[in-house]
Image 1: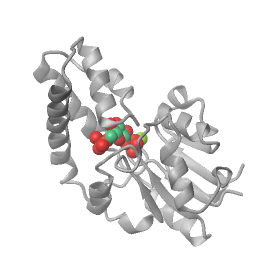
Image 2: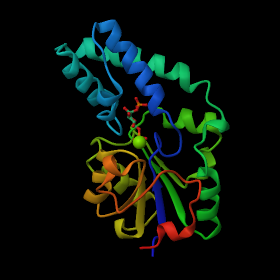
Image 3: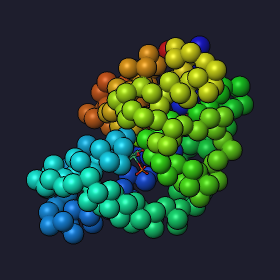
Length: 213
Ligand code: B16
Ligand code: MG
């Protein structure tokens, strides 16, 4: 029986992927090349610096570390302009209800995200108190598909990996869950998330059957 649920943030609790895309797209434009939504799919669940490296690869550019730090900081400033306008209305449909449902039957709940902006986002959307543990990009050294983020979350919840279930929208995140010995429910499209143990479009119709295996 699943005792703990670990939620990814971007693409699962909120749709911040479009804000990441707008900021990366703007950066690419300033650097003189086009960055498409298809390219952006490769950035989901990936850390900020690894994302920048992929973007530079797409543009065929090679830069020094200080130059990269500057660009990553600029992208984050543009991203934060969007984040600071977020409200509880930005929580994806059904998420609050599903969190409440899990809580009502005594499940433990954690956040497991690559984002270093997670705490700002949770404050903006009013969900800071919904999680027993918050593991964000500031607490992990190894990015998804490494399972570190989810293993820290399970340890925080005082549960073993087998007792935990991960909710993820990114290929790297599904792999990270499996690499950590956890089952994973994919949020999104079957063609992208085919490795997930179950796939749902979102939490709108979600019931407790979802966490039964
Ligand atoms: P930040 P998740 C990830 O969040 C995003 O999917 C990914 O696109 C982003 O680059 C990464 O966070 C880092 O975000 O720049 O805010 O630190 O999906 O793991 O919740
Ligand atoms: Mg995500």
